[in-house]
Image (cartoon, rainbow, N blue to C red):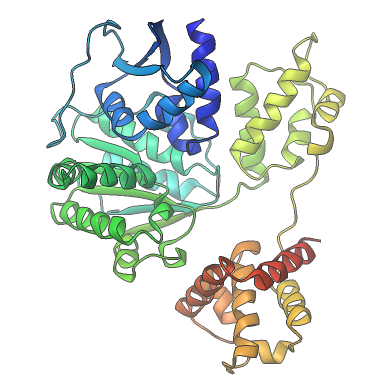
Length: 439
């Protein structure tokens, strides 16, 4: 009964809570009791319990009451605490000397389980350096790249490595969690306690930094936290979906701070790494495959590890009733329409050609030094499309678009991103262009 109830609540929460926060805080919880309309769930640490109480209790209660009725209540305890006994509350204040444990959902991410290739080797080496060197030169370490390429894996591995070394207090969280905790602290007039909690850690690890974009108050608080830690020589590790200069809605001063250490891009996996990832994921599921299946899967449509795991889950479901190794025929049957090759990256020339066609300008005008509105908008669109649909770095995009510099491209991309929120015609034009350059 209680497991069924909690399962329905979790389903409702999964649709309401950001994926990473759900995986970190909700997924590891398990139901303990359902008595007198009160649902008790257990977590693994006081940290998780207090964070849920401060940030997620309203969402959990709303989901629970939709499932069990308006009179239902919710209680979260630390593993091993009796359901009827209140759990001890840890007050907000200075970070305790005990090293903080990582949420259960992220503990599977270690250096040992990270699959390395040419596209992520520098990121792995840099992450190891942070753990192994007491006075790391890489401060801050800023990892960036697309979804599912291993940024969170490396951040979690750093956290666990530092905890195991017993030489640093560690705080790992997403930028969204930082913002939520700040909001709670402001509402409760406990900002000083909030600051002590973050500015006293030995190593601060923050994922999804792009979430700070457009949030000036949170950026200001994060900047002060960054400065306080950096002045003490404490380590800062950050991750984002793009480099600092390409983050829209980010204050210039904060961008400069984020860029002040080592920035490492994690790129999409090449053929060798794709094969290694397929083999590792199949082995983790204890799946036996016939010759040629690894090569077949390496070519299927997936751009990151999360998509690969989805494909393998589908194959496993199709193979569950069969005996013997998984065949190429079974894989093709299981994947069906999913089994298509990765889309080709657009070329610079293709982008320029399509933009010129769309806006009725010539290539010479687009690459010229002219700044009239008729030319500036398509030029910015070309910068935006090259940034998101080609492999060229920002400096190379600027150089190809008439010898412009890196900062000009950042400005152009940001200008388009700002206009997309309110310009229906521009959104329609971009959709047409994106279809054509992918065709």
